[in-house]
Structure formats: structure tokens, C-alpha cells
Image 1 (tube, helix red, strand yellow):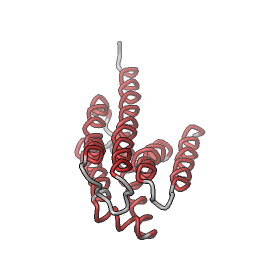
Image 2 (cartoon, rainbow, N blue to C red):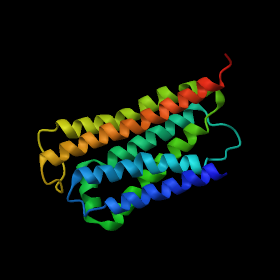
Image 3 (spheres, rainbow, N blue to C red):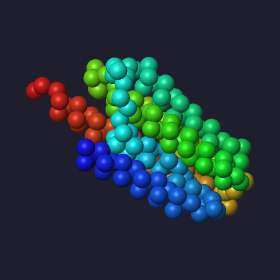
Image 4 (cartoon, rainbow, N blue to C red):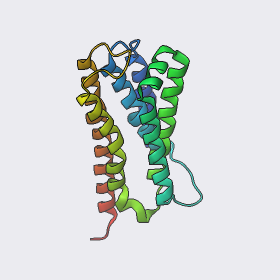
Length: 189
């Protein structure tokens, strides 16, 4: 129980940190660091602190569905129109971050509540789930011109892309390594 409380406290700290990072969105790289917290870090910690209670373990279809929703939420909010609109409206910006948090929580909570037979698939699922965010980051980094009206320079967008692809990918990699190691520890020798 104390461990779960620690995860919850960590999630609250991550969200407080993301709110503290909010700089009026003049720095796109900092804004992407906020998004990393809302998409990956806080949802992961929340899923560890408040696991979903299901009557039966989740099947692959539920895991895949939540991964698709998580990716769709991330990608839609990073399209130029929705992104710029969210930057101009604090209310919409809050909706953006809450939808990222909810989609991320659903993905991680369902993944961690998957049927025991799916445990060997957690690392490959995380690898596949990391692809949309990494592709978005690479596309932002390699873009020949800024995508967003709020991006001060192409260099800022490129740095934001590096943050998106490297840090987001690192979160998935860390979870995959820990999950795979835990599965190996449970397997009989």
C-alpha cells in the first residue's frame, strides 16, 4: 500500500512539475517536455498507483485499443491546428493535457492489467506503442520549416522534436525493460 501511495505522490509531483514548466508556450521544447509528462510520465505513475480493477485480466484487443487511442490523442493534439488553438486558449489547453493524461493512464493501466499469458508481449507492445511519438518527434526534428504559429524558430521546433522522440521513447524503453525483467524473474528456471 505504501508503494502505491509513493507512485501516486510521484504522479502528483510530475503533474505539478508540468504545470510549473508552463511558460506561456514561448519555448516549444519546454512545451514538449510538458507533453512528455502528460502523455507518459504522470499516466505511468498513476497506473502504478491506481491500477484498474477488472473482473478478468485484459486481453490483447483491449491493450491494442488503448494503445491506438493513446497514439491518436497524442497525434491529433500535435497537428498544427489543434496545437495552435490549445496554445491560444487556456481552457482548451487544459482539455489537451487532461485528454493526454486520461489516454496515457488507460493505456498503461490496461497494459499492466493484461492477462498473464500476455506478459511476454509487454515489451514488444511498448516498442510498437512508442513508434507514433518517436515518428512525430523525428518529423518535427527534420521538418524544413516550422509547423506551429507559436514556434519562434525552426531550431526550437527541432529541439522540441528531439525531446519528444528521445525522452518519450526512453520512458517506453524503461517500462519495457522493467516489465521484461519482471516476467523473466517469474518464469521457472
